[in-house]
Image 1: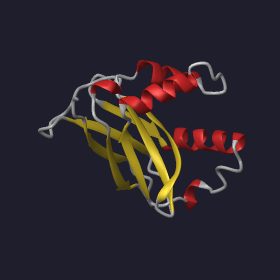
Image 2 (image 1 turned 135 degrees about the horizontal axis):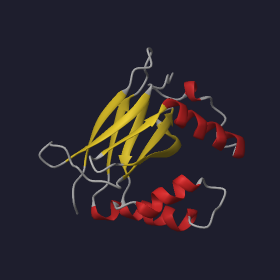
Image 3 (image 1 turned 90 degrees about the vertical axis):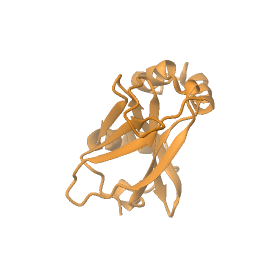
Image 4 (image 1 turned 45 degrees about the horizontal axis):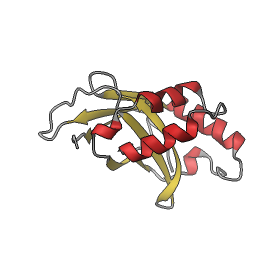
Amino acid sequence: MLRLPEHIEVRLSDARGGAANEGDILVAVNLLASGRYYYGNLVGLTGTDGVVRQTREELERRYLRDQAHFPMDYKLELIECDPQIELTVLSGAEVATARTAVAEDFSIAVDIRESYARARNQEYASSLLRVSADSVRGWPLVVVLPLLRI
């Protein structure tokens, strides 16, 4: 059961565990079902402080929009997903592939297309962290992800 937190905040850290104050790094969230990838979307681009945040309402809104467009792909309600989620700094290759795919696809929201266009992920290694996100009280989830320059 997944009861999403009030918001998800991702803070990037450097190799020493300190704050990685890098902007325009694209971070994604993956929801799981039975331990496997079920649905993914963007948390967004980090600010110059290396932090990005997405509200529960925004993630729910995006999921419902995608569910309406692809009902055969997204049959579960969000609460039916696993309590663990994955947060990831996308690889440069993933961003490049998506950038090409979404550039002229006007069914993709403008903010998503712009996020891919601005992303600087090619300068860094990808990273992924699986965490428990089930929040009975709806409290925020704050996660630190490593950011390592290639």
